[in-house]
Amino acid sequence: MKEIIINKDLNNNQSIVALLENGRIIEQYDDSNNINAFEGNIYCGIVRNILPGMQSAFVDIGEDKNAFLHIKDVVPKVSNQTGNKEEDLSKYDINKYLKVNMPILVQVKKDEEDKKGARISKHISLTGRLCILLIDENFITVSQKIEDKDERDRLKNVASKILKNIKAQNYGLILRTASEGKEQEEIEKDIKELIQLWDAIYEKYNDIIKEHKPQLIYKNYNIISKFLTSVLETDISRVIVNSKSIYSSIEKYIKEIHKENIEIDYREENLMQMYDLQEQLEKIHERKIWLKCGGFITIDKTEALTAIDVNSGKFTGKKDMQKNNTIFKVNKEATIEIAKQIRLRNISGIIVIDYIDMQRDEERKEIIELLEQNLKQDRSKTQVIGFTKLDLLEMTRKKL
View (tube, rainbow, N blue to C red):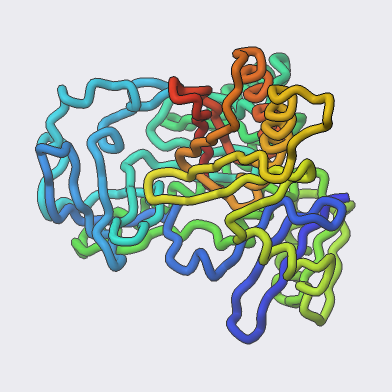
Protein backbone atom coordinates (compact mmCIF):
# COMPACT_ATOMS: atom_id res chain seq x y z
CA MET A 1 0.00 0.00 0.00
CA LYS A 2 1.24 3.46 -0.91
CA GLU A 3 0.43 6.47 1.25
CA ILE A 4 1.60 10.03 1.75
CA ILE A 5 2.52 11.51 5.12
CA ILE A 6 2.59 15.31 5.48
CA ASN A 7 3.85 16.38 8.88
CA LYS A 8 3.84 20.10 9.73
CA ASP A 9 5.99 21.21 12.68
CA LEU A 10 4.04 23.96 14.41
CA ASN A 11 7.17 25.24 16.15
CA ASN A 12 9.04 26.23 12.96
CA ASN A 13 6.18 26.06 10.43
CA GLN A 14 8.17 23.62 8.27
CA SER A 15 6.80 20.49 6.64
CA ILE A 16 8.12 17.05 5.82
CA VAL A 17 6.45 15.17 2.98
CA ALA A 18 7.06 11.44 2.62
CA LEU A 19 5.85 8.83 0.14
CA LEU A 20 5.63 5.42 1.81
CA GLU A 21 5.21 1.92 0.48
CA ASN A 22 4.21 -0.64 3.11
CA GLY A 23 5.49 1.68 5.83
CA ARG A 24 8.91 2.30 4.28
CA ILE A 25 9.92 5.72 2.93
CA ILE A 26 10.67 5.67 -0.80
CA GLU A 27 10.64 9.47 -1.37
CA GLN A 28 10.90 12.37 1.07
CA TYR A 29 11.14 16.16 0.87
CA ASP A 30 11.84 18.68 3.59
CA ASP A 31 10.77 22.34 3.50
CA SER A 32 13.88 23.35 5.45
CA ASN A 33 16.02 22.37 2.45
CA ASN A 34 13.91 24.50 0.11
CA ILE A 35 13.97 27.89 1.84
CA ASN A 36 16.16 29.32 -0.92
CA ALA A 37 14.81 27.15 -3.71
CA PHE A 38 14.05 29.20 -6.81
CA GLU A 39 13.90 26.43 -9.43
CA GLY A 40 10.94 26.95 -11.74
CA ASN A 41 10.43 30.58 -10.69
CA ILE A 42 10.04 33.12 -13.50
CA TYR A 43 11.59 36.59 -13.20
CA CYS A 44 11.94 39.85 -14.99
CA GLY A 45 15.75 40.02 -14.87
CA ILE A 46 18.17 42.81 -15.71
CA VAL A 47 21.42 41.98 -17.54
CA ARG A 48 24.30 43.32 -15.42
CA ASN A 49 27.43 41.85 -17.04
CA ILE A 50 28.21 40.19 -20.36
CA LEU A 51 31.22 37.89 -20.71
CA PRO A 52 31.81 37.38 -24.48
CA GLY A 53 34.75 35.01 -23.87
CA MET A 54 32.49 32.67 -21.88
CA GLN A 55 29.45 33.24 -24.11
CA SER A 56 27.48 34.07 -20.96
CA ALA A 57 26.02 36.83 -18.84
CA PHE A 58 25.14 37.60 -15.24
CA VAL A 59 21.56 38.65 -14.67
CA ASP A 60 20.10 40.38 -11.62
CA ILE A 61 16.83 38.62 -10.72
CA GLY A 62 16.37 40.36 -7.38
CA GLU A 63 17.81 37.55 -5.24
CA ASP A 64 21.04 37.55 -3.20
CA LYS A 65 23.29 36.51 -6.08
CA ASN A 66 23.19 37.39 -9.77
CA ALA A 67 22.07 34.45 -11.91
CA PHE A 68 24.13 32.83 -14.68
CA LEU A 69 22.83 32.75 -18.26
CA HIS A 70 24.70 30.83 -21.01
CA ILE A 71 24.31 31.35 -24.74
CA LYS A 72 22.77 27.87 -25.17
CA ASP A 73 19.88 29.03 -22.97
CA VAL A 74 19.45 32.21 -25.02
CA VAL A 75 19.37 31.10 -28.66
CA PRO A 76 16.38 29.06 -29.94
CA LYS A 77 16.64 25.28 -29.54
CA VAL A 78 17.87 23.54 -32.67
CA SER A 79 16.74 20.03 -31.69
CA ASN A 80 13.59 18.66 -30.08
CA GLN A 81 15.60 15.84 -28.49
CA THR A 82 18.90 17.42 -27.40
CA GLY A 83 18.08 21.14 -27.40
CA ASN A 84 21.36 23.03 -27.87
CA LYS A 85 23.62 20.50 -26.12
CA GLU A 86 25.22 19.34 -29.38
CA GLU A 87 25.06 22.71 -31.15
CA ASP A 88 28.28 24.51 -32.18
CA LEU A 89 27.80 27.53 -29.92
CA SER A 90 30.98 29.27 -31.13
CA LYS A 91 29.09 30.55 -34.18
CA TYR A 92 26.86 32.70 -31.96
CA ASP A 93 27.75 36.11 -30.56
CA ILE A 94 26.06 36.74 -27.23
CA ASN A 95 26.31 40.51 -27.73
CA LYS A 96 23.77 40.20 -30.56
CA TYR A 97 21.21 38.79 -28.14
CA LEU A 98 21.90 40.61 -24.87
CA LYS A 99 22.83 44.15 -23.83
CA VAL A 100 23.84 45.48 -20.40
CA ASN A 101 20.81 46.84 -18.44
CA MET A 102 18.48 45.01 -20.81
CA PRO A 103 15.34 43.53 -19.13
CA ILE A 104 14.66 39.88 -20.03
CA LEU A 105 12.14 37.23 -19.05
CA VAL A 106 13.92 34.20 -17.57
CA GLN A 107 13.20 31.02 -15.63
CA VAL A 108 15.42 29.40 -13.00
CA LYS A 109 16.54 25.96 -14.18
CA LYS A 110 18.97 25.20 -11.34
CA ASP A 111 19.08 26.61 -7.80
CA GLU A 112 22.07 28.53 -6.52
CA GLU A 113 24.77 26.48 -4.78
CA ASP A 114 27.29 27.78 -2.24
CA LYS A 115 28.97 30.75 -3.96
CA LYS A 116 27.31 30.16 -7.34
CA GLY A 117 24.16 31.97 -8.37
CA ALA A 118 21.17 30.25 -9.92
CA ARG A 119 21.31 28.94 -13.50
CA ILE A 120 18.62 30.58 -15.66
CA SER A 121 17.23 30.23 -19.18
CA LYS A 122 15.12 32.18 -21.65
CA HIS A 123 13.46 28.87 -22.56
CA ILE A 124 10.30 28.94 -20.42
CA SER A 125 8.23 25.88 -19.45
CA LEU A 126 5.20 25.47 -17.20
CA THR A 127 4.39 22.16 -15.52
CA GLY A 128 0.83 20.97 -15.13
CA ARG A 129 -0.73 17.79 -13.80
CA LEU A 130 -0.63 15.97 -17.14
CA CYS A 131 1.50 18.16 -19.44
CA ILE A 132 4.46 20.51 -19.59
CA LEU A 133 3.83 23.58 -21.75
CA LEU A 134 6.88 24.79 -23.69
CA ILE A 135 6.84 28.45 -24.72
CA ASP A 136 7.91 29.35 -28.27
CA GLU A 137 8.41 25.72 -29.28
CA ASN A 138 6.61 23.74 -31.96
CA PHE A 139 7.02 20.07 -31.06
CA ILE A 140 5.07 17.49 -29.08
CA THR A 141 6.74 14.63 -27.24
CA VAL A 142 5.73 11.98 -24.70
CA SER A 143 7.39 10.88 -21.47
CA GLN A 144 9.84 8.05 -22.06
CA LYS A 145 8.30 6.22 -19.13
CA ILE A 146 5.23 5.58 -21.30
CA GLU A 147 6.59 2.64 -23.28
CA ASP A 148 3.50 1.49 -25.19
CA LYS A 149 3.92 2.76 -28.78
CA ASP A 150 0.19 2.88 -29.51
CA GLU A 151 -0.43 4.96 -26.39
CA ARG A 152 2.42 7.31 -27.25
CA ASP A 153 1.02 7.82 -30.74
CA ARG A 154 -2.49 8.37 -29.36
CA LEU A 155 -1.29 11.00 -26.91
CA LYS A 156 0.66 12.85 -29.62
CA ASN A 157 -2.39 12.90 -31.87
CA VAL A 158 -4.64 14.07 -29.04
CA ALA A 159 -2.23 16.87 -28.08
CA SER A 160 -1.82 17.98 -31.70
CA LYS A 161 -5.58 18.07 -32.18
CA ILE A 162 -6.07 20.11 -28.99
CA LEU A 163 -3.48 22.73 -29.94
CA LYS A 164 -4.99 23.01 -33.40
CA ASN A 165 -8.57 23.31 -32.09
CA ILE A 166 -7.74 26.05 -29.58
CA LYS A 167 -5.50 27.76 -32.14
CA ALA A 168 -2.55 27.73 -29.76
CA GLN A 169 0.51 28.72 -31.75
CA ASN A 170 4.14 28.82 -30.63
CA TYR A 171 3.59 26.19 -27.94
CA GLY A 172 5.24 22.82 -27.54
CA LEU A 173 4.09 20.05 -25.23
CA ILE A 174 5.55 17.23 -23.20
CA LEU A 175 2.92 14.67 -22.21
CA ARG A 176 3.84 13.56 -18.69
CA THR A 177 3.64 9.99 -17.42
CA ALA A 178 0.41 10.90 -15.63
CA SER A 179 -1.27 11.52 -19.01
CA GLU A 180 -1.22 7.81 -19.84
CA GLY A 181 -4.76 6.57 -20.40
CA LYS A 182 -6.32 10.03 -19.97
CA GLU A 183 -9.08 11.20 -22.31
CA GLN A 184 -8.84 14.25 -24.59
CA GLU A 185 -11.17 16.35 -22.43
CA GLU A 186 -8.98 15.99 -19.34
CA ILE A 187 -5.75 16.69 -21.23
CA GLU A 188 -7.32 19.71 -22.95
CA LYS A 189 -8.37 21.15 -19.58
CA ASP A 190 -4.78 20.88 -18.32
CA ILE A 191 -3.35 22.53 -21.46
CA LYS A 192 -5.84 25.41 -21.38
CA GLU A 193 -5.05 26.10 -17.72
CA LEU A 194 -1.31 26.25 -18.52
CA ILE A 195 -1.89 28.61 -21.44
CA GLN A 196 -4.02 30.87 -19.22
CA LEU A 197 -1.23 30.86 -16.65
CA TRP A 198 1.33 31.81 -19.31
CA ASP A 199 -0.90 34.63 -20.59
CA ALA A 200 -1.09 36.03 -17.06
CA ILE A 201 2.69 35.75 -16.60
CA TYR A 202 3.44 37.48 -19.89
CA GLU A 203 0.92 40.23 -19.20
CA LYS A 204 2.52 40.87 -15.82
CA TYR A 205 5.97 40.95 -17.43
CA ASN A 206 4.84 43.59 -19.93
CA ASP A 207 3.49 45.70 -17.07
CA ILE A 208 6.56 45.60 -14.83
CA ILE A 209 9.14 45.86 -17.63
CA LYS A 210 8.44 49.61 -17.59
CA GLU A 211 9.75 49.78 -14.02
CA HIS A 212 13.14 48.50 -15.27
CA LYS A 213 14.01 46.56 -12.14
CA PRO A 214 14.36 42.85 -11.32
CA GLN A 215 11.20 41.25 -9.98
CA LEU A 216 9.71 37.83 -9.31
CA ILE A 217 6.77 37.30 -11.67
CA TYR A 218 5.77 33.70 -10.98
CA LYS A 219 6.65 31.54 -7.99
CA ASN A 220 6.82 27.82 -8.63
CA TYR A 221 4.80 25.40 -6.52
CA ASN A 222 5.67 25.00 -2.87
CA ILE A 223 7.07 21.59 -1.99
CA ILE A 224 3.71 20.06 -1.04
CA SER A 225 1.84 21.24 -4.14
CA LYS A 226 4.66 20.17 -6.47
CA PHE A 227 4.80 16.74 -4.86
CA LEU A 228 1.05 16.12 -4.88
CA THR A 229 0.62 17.30 -8.48
CA SER A 230 2.63 14.29 -9.69
CA VAL A 231 2.21 11.66 -7.01
CA LEU A 232 -1.58 11.69 -6.66
CA GLU A 233 -1.79 10.42 -10.24
CA THR A 234 -0.17 7.15 -9.13
CA ASP A 235 -1.65 4.34 -7.02
CA ILE A 236 -1.94 6.26 -3.73
CA SER A 237 -4.38 4.80 -1.18
CA ARG A 238 -4.22 7.36 1.61
CA VAL A 239 -2.93 10.81 2.58
CA ILE A 240 -2.32 11.51 6.28
CA VAL A 241 -1.83 15.13 7.47
CA ASN A 242 -1.68 16.98 10.77
CA SER A 243 -2.62 20.44 9.45
CA LYS A 244 -6.23 21.52 8.91
CA SER A 245 -5.32 24.03 6.20
CA ILE A 246 -3.30 21.44 4.26
CA TYR A 247 -6.11 18.91 4.76
CA SER A 248 -8.66 21.32 3.28
CA SER A 249 -6.52 22.17 0.23
CA ILE A 250 -5.81 18.49 -0.49
CA GLU A 251 -9.47 17.57 -0.11
CA LYS A 252 -10.40 20.27 -2.63
CA TYR A 253 -7.65 19.21 -5.06
CA ILE A 254 -8.63 15.52 -4.91
CA LYS A 255 -12.20 16.44 -5.86
CA GLU A 256 -10.96 18.55 -8.77
CA ILE A 257 -8.95 15.68 -10.25
CA HIS A 258 -11.68 13.10 -9.50
CA LYS A 259 -9.59 10.97 -7.14
CA GLU A 260 -12.28 10.54 -4.46
CA ASN A 261 -11.07 6.96 -3.89
CA ILE A 262 -8.02 8.37 -2.06
CA GLU A 263 -8.62 8.47 1.70
CA ILE A 264 -7.63 11.68 3.51
CA ASP A 265 -6.86 11.24 7.21
CA TYR A 266 -6.42 14.22 9.57
CA ARG A 267 -4.65 13.62 12.91
CA GLU A 268 -3.78 16.15 15.60
CA GLU A 269 -0.40 14.68 16.45
CA ASN A 270 3.23 14.50 15.41
CA LEU A 271 3.17 12.03 12.55
CA MET A 272 6.90 11.35 12.79
CA GLN A 273 6.17 8.64 15.34
CA MET A 274 4.29 6.60 12.72
CA TYR A 275 6.23 3.73 11.12
CA ASP A 276 9.35 4.99 12.97
CA LEU A 277 9.58 7.78 10.38
CA GLN A 278 12.07 9.80 12.43
CA GLU A 279 14.45 6.85 12.58
CA GLN A 280 14.03 6.19 8.85
CA LEU A 281 14.76 9.85 8.00
CA GLU A 282 17.91 9.88 10.15
CA LYS A 283 19.30 6.90 8.26
CA ILE A 284 18.83 8.72 4.94
CA HIS A 285 21.71 11.06 5.82
CA GLU A 286 24.17 8.28 6.68
CA ARG A 287 27.17 7.97 4.38
CA LYS A 288 27.44 4.18 4.64
CA ILE A 289 24.55 1.85 3.80
CA TRP A 290 24.91 -1.84 4.65
CA LEU A 291 23.61 -4.50 2.28
CA LYS A 292 21.88 -7.70 3.42
CA CYS A 293 24.73 -9.82 2.07
CA GLY A 294 27.27 -8.03 4.32
CA GLY A 295 28.67 -5.67 1.72
CA PHE A 296 28.03 -1.92 1.78
CA ILE A 297 27.91 1.20 -0.36
CA THR A 298 29.12 4.71 0.47
CA ILE A 299 27.62 7.90 -0.97
CA ASP A 300 29.68 11.09 -1.22
CA LYS A 301 28.34 14.27 -2.79
CA THR A 302 30.76 16.80 -4.24
CA GLU A 303 30.09 20.06 -6.05
CA ALA A 304 30.62 18.41 -9.44
CA LEU A 305 29.04 14.98 -8.96
CA THR A 306 27.91 12.27 -6.56
CA ALA A 307 30.29 9.33 -6.10
CA ILE A 308 28.94 5.95 -4.98
CA ASP A 309 31.40 3.23 -4.00
CA VAL A 310 30.55 -0.48 -3.70
CA ASN A 311 32.47 -2.60 -1.18
CA SER A 312 32.33 -6.32 -0.36
CA GLY A 313 32.63 -5.59 3.38
CA LYS A 314 31.97 -8.67 5.50
CA PHE A 315 30.70 -10.76 2.60
CA THR A 316 33.10 -13.48 1.48
CA GLY A 317 30.58 -15.83 -0.10
CA LYS A 318 29.99 -19.49 0.59
CA LYS A 319 32.87 -21.93 0.78
CA ASP A 320 32.18 -23.35 -2.67
CA MET A 321 31.44 -19.94 -4.26
CA GLN A 322 34.01 -18.64 -6.71
CA LYS A 323 35.44 -15.14 -6.21
CA ASN A 324 33.80 -13.78 -9.38
CA ASN A 325 30.38 -15.00 -8.21
CA THR A 326 30.91 -13.38 -4.81
CA ILE A 327 31.76 -10.03 -6.41
CA PHE A 328 28.81 -10.22 -8.82
CA LYS A 329 26.37 -10.99 -5.99
CA VAL A 330 27.50 -7.90 -4.07
CA ASN A 331 27.34 -5.71 -7.18
CA LYS A 332 23.80 -6.87 -8.00
CA GLU A 333 22.51 -6.27 -4.49
CA ALA A 334 24.29 -2.89 -4.44
CA THR A 335 22.62 -1.93 -7.74
CA ILE A 336 19.13 -2.42 -6.32
CA GLU A 337 20.03 -0.40 -3.21
CA ILE A 338 21.67 2.37 -5.25
CA ALA A 339 18.51 2.89 -7.33
CA LYS A 340 16.53 3.07 -4.09
CA GLN A 341 18.92 5.53 -2.41
CA ILE A 342 19.14 7.84 -5.45
CA ARG A 343 15.36 8.26 -5.37
CA LEU A 344 15.16 8.44 -1.57
CA ARG A 345 17.83 11.15 -1.30
CA ASN A 346 16.71 12.92 -4.51
CA ILE A 347 20.29 12.80 -5.82
CA SER A 348 20.61 14.70 -9.10
CA GLY A 349 23.20 15.65 -11.69
CA ILE A 350 26.13 13.41 -12.59
CA ILE A 351 26.38 10.17 -10.62
CA VAL A 352 29.45 7.91 -10.82
CA ILE A 353 29.31 4.38 -9.41
CA ASP A 354 32.51 2.49 -8.60
CA TYR A 355 31.55 -1.18 -8.59
CA ILE A 356 33.82 -3.97 -7.45
CA ASP A 357 35.83 -4.86 -10.56
CA MET A 358 34.11 -7.31 -12.91
CA GLN A 359 36.01 -9.32 -15.47
CA ARG A 360 33.29 -10.11 -17.98
CA ASP A 361 31.32 -7.72 -20.22
CA GLU A 362 28.25 -9.93 -19.76
CA GLU A 363 28.24 -9.07 -16.06
CA ARG A 364 28.55 -5.33 -16.76
CA LYS A 365 25.65 -5.58 -19.22
CA GLU A 366 23.50 -7.37 -16.64
CA ILE A 367 24.32 -4.71 -14.02
CA ILE A 368 23.26 -1.94 -16.43
CA GLU A 369 19.99 -3.74 -17.22
CA LEU A 370 19.30 -4.32 -13.51
CA LEU A 371 19.95 -0.65 -12.73
CA GLU A 372 17.70 0.55 -15.57
CA GLN A 373 14.95 -1.82 -14.46
CA ASN A 374 15.01 -0.51 -10.88
CA LEU A 375 15.23 3.12 -12.01
CA LYS A 376 11.87 2.71 -13.80
CA GLN A 377 10.22 3.14 -10.40
CA ASP A 378 11.78 6.62 -10.13
CA ARG A 379 9.47 9.49 -11.16
CA SER A 380 12.45 11.57 -12.25
CA LYS A 381 14.19 11.33 -15.61
CA THR A 382 17.34 9.19 -15.44
CA GLN A 383 19.89 8.16 -18.03
CA VAL A 384 22.42 5.37 -17.64
CA ILE A 385 25.43 6.20 -19.83
CA GLY A 386 27.43 3.01 -19.21
CA PHE A 387 30.87 1.94 -18.01
CA THR A 388 33.92 4.09 -18.74
CA LYS A 389 37.43 2.85 -19.58
CA LEU A 390 38.19 3.13 -15.87
CA ASP A 391 35.31 0.70 -15.21
CA LEU A 392 33.15 3.37 -13.55
CA LEU A 393 29.45 3.46 -14.34
CA GLU A 394 28.14 6.91 -15.29
CA MET A 395 24.53 8.03 -15.08
CA THR A 396 22.55 11.25 -14.70
CA ARG A 397 19.31 12.10 -12.91
CA LYS A 398 17.11 15.17 -12.99
CA LYS A 399 16.23 16.71 -9.64
CA LEU A 400 12.59 16.50 -8.56
